[in-house]
Amino acid sequence: MGALIWGGVVLTLIGVGLLVYCIVAAMKAKKLGGSDEDIRARLQKVVALNLVALLVSAMGLGAVTIGIILG
Image 1 (cartoon, rainbow, N blue to C red):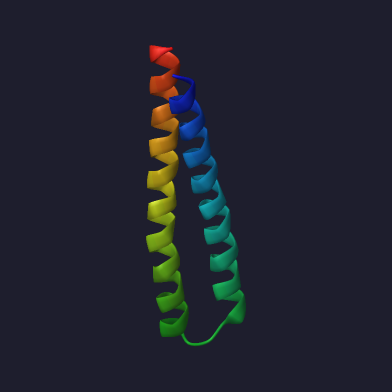
Image 2 (image 1 turned 60 degrees about the vertical axis):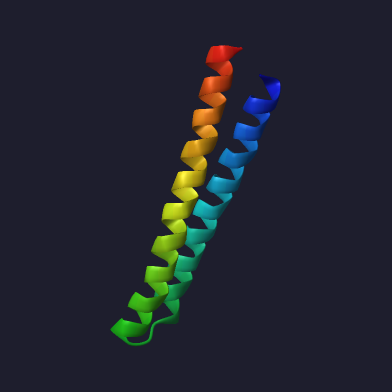
């Protein structure tokens, strides 16, 4: 069960890292400015990556939870 817990921890940390990246990318997109459509296009890419980051984090937390319950 240790491998399941540590694998979940790694997935969770990757997801949190991606979330931090999304925050920085969104702030950078707003800071760069431009037309509304340019900002919207940049932020749409960030939103897609944000959803992936949330999924990875949730899978990691689920793996940790299952590992703790079974262990």
